[in-house]
Length: 212
Image (cartoon, rainbow, N blue to C red; front, side):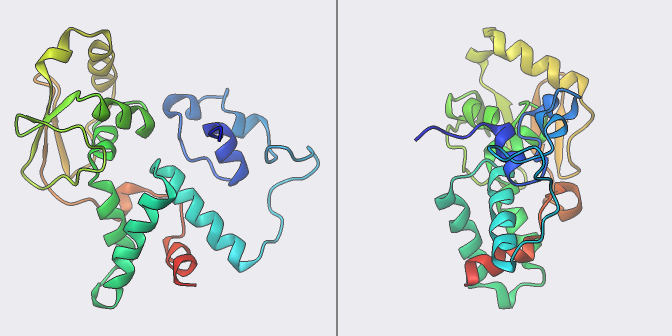
């Protein structure tokens, strides 16, 4: 099965999900130029009334694509929260925290990758160390106090120079992360915040979808 392009995903879900990093912020973004879903006629514009089920489905799809997760991975996270939902103060926050702490997402939030897809690829190719030990599992759940650094053998690669350049041009990452741009070393210093995550999704609808 051919994977749908990132731009078509945003158009189909009527939401700019910033799946291609900097390109999504430029005027070249297809989401801006094409105000209709893939395969639809130009006259068919956004804003059409939809059913509650379809809304929940779209919200689920948006959050899954936003974090670059497979259906199996995303459902696993949601179901984990649903099982203990009654005992939680804020289920939406707990879901976001669970996903935000994935190593691939942390690399993206540290501005060491232009997109979550690239971050996942970098982690899978063993670009990073956690507490000086190599970790190549994108879903690894990072913990407060852990230190993330670039593998020494990768510092000669062209991609390493690109990572350093991108990081230098960006502002400091989220408040729960600390990045030393000179050493190219980061530390988990807190917990993810719902406001900072800025997930463009009605998370309660995601829970409703999986509760059916």
